[in-house]
Length: 144
Image (tube, rainbow, N blue to C red; front, side):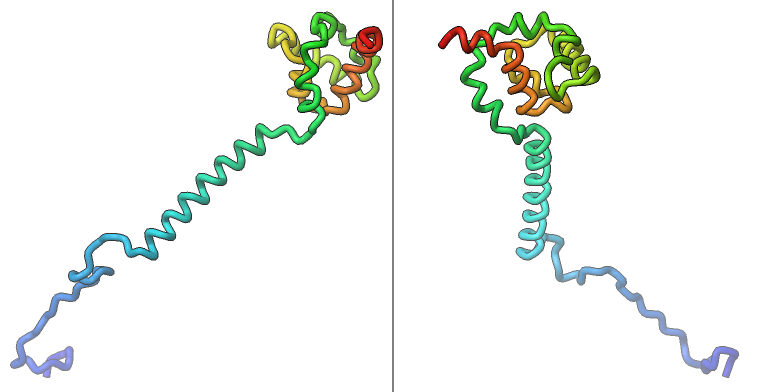
């Protein structure tokens, strides 16, 4: 016997071993269970993207929906000519919010819809209602 405990008269036999995961008989198509799983993952991803977009663009306050039909009655030149100081006279609006309103108004070339004010961070529908009341309460009372 040699060093490896092999009889030197026995020839070495080496066999090839297939280490592939799939057996040669299996084809590489997806099984029905795998197809369903893949479809579910794709749908979940799609719904997540749509959901994120919807949440990002959703206005949760309902007042703007009520005011939307009434926007034609407001003379927007009043809002478009108001100063930072004018806005600061309204409860809930300090210098930072008033400046943000004026800067936003200037960046878009003036408000074309009263509800655009709610696009500004920190301006809720209740603050919009206060703005409308402050600037337009005399107009609505005189129309009645």
